[in-house]
Length: 111
Image (cartoon, rainbow, N blue to C red):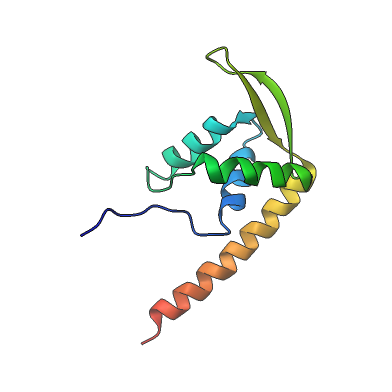
């Protein structure tokens, strides 16, 4: 059997990033990916090639704000924080995810 993929279902990345930033802490990209991987018990992995374009779009949409800062390892990085618009979007994303998972559950229960 081939290696198990842990690709994130398309459309859930925004939800995962917004939820991660909802803690109120400013986080740089690597910290966001590490948090998602850790909290998911290593089941989910966000690749840089997906993360940074998503963060850029979210910044353009006003859901996150970014500013330069220094990491704990004294490296310069962009730190992201959730905005008020981002909190509202998080609520919409959570509601959408709930509808999707409800629909999938209904199909899986169908006999």
